[in-house]
Image (tube, rainbow, N blue to C red; front, side, top):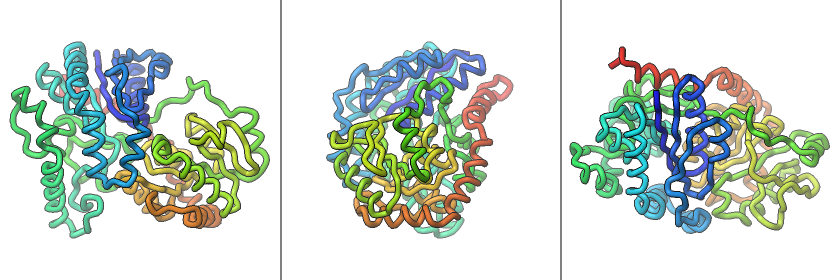
Length: 421
């Protein structure tokens, strides 16, 4: 079978789709991946390593992710989403749609990032199956769990709150998000979140089931497959001599990163991390974002590192300080390491509370309120209380036995099989 995959976003939205493409190809299918990269990072090498056909659409975006991150650092989630779409999605909507139409015409099945409604439209116009992938289950309605930040009013009233959230999302974005849909003459959309931004046939929730105990209440089209983890056996990154010497010189360090969001506040991040490590009296490996801290350099108990595959290093650390991105959260958990989450937006706060609920993390520390003293206090708590390490190791063993990519491939192929039509 020929399968087309299309995704949009940053590294956390793209690497899991490469993992899925690799899994489908290993199952005997031909896969083409179309990527819209917000930071213009190219993934041709990674796709080439796995023999995945790759297209970047557009080839270059006139979008400064660092400048945007700095402008939106203190926006609420709704303001941030509107600003992001206005700057980095709607100007490229037609280009993304044309790439989606080509993908739908060339392939038997298309799979897309849950936000890529242009691919859903293209699939409907070409009469091809469209499946979606969602990276956070916080948007999936269930009676026993209210929408994030809403009060838990019980199984009878929580569904009303989900409906309220539908209407709120429609009020903010429905007109813009349904413009292309309506132009193509498709039936009217009632609610954007439930009817436009995911597949009506199969929506893969790329979250390990350990994080979503209420999944039995989801509609059948929503299926938790697990974390889509990119294989590292073909990755040529390894711990160099300087880093290995640092690891050998003392107890396991704390790892600190804000991922791509560190670009929003590069100097503040480094000051926060270095001062918190000093106050906590711990060793630390810090992802560098300032010329004052060159990559692959050491200052006493601190080692500064550039971009690299997280899981190869997380397993050598005592804990991970991070922003709460879905990929980083899963990577830390997969390695059995407790987290200290400093979220910049609601989705990351959602993940922070998810690992806190499993007793693998302290209470999240929102970035807009964070200072070195508070972070140091949380580091001390994590390092001194064995229950965080114990629970993280236990959950890490559960996740490591689950195969997210394999589960996703099985779900896709079962749904696509003619006998299930």
